[in-house]
Image (cartoon, rainbow, N blue to C red; front, side):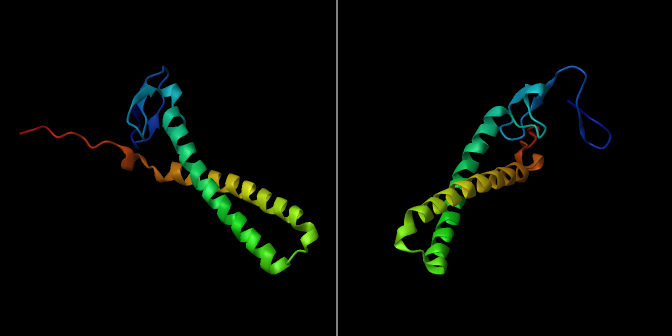
Length: 123
């Protein structure tokens, strides 16, 4: 991979190797995504975002259940339907929170943070 005069990475005509910005392993350029992440690092980021997503979804579901219990005060006849509303809110909230967490994880990993320090020659 080469850089132009401004320091931006320029893809070559032929496949070359590039370094994943997270794990610092070398891969062919075509195997990395547009942010130079390998598939293994993407998978680990998705798994980590999944945990954050469920945590956010449970929080949204708890807030929704609290609002229904204290604000709406449903009758005992419709508790099953309201339980379904809370379950669906938890599931949709977890999906939304997972995507937000994944975006935050991806954009917080900057190249200068993930790059390995250059080795200095020993004197």
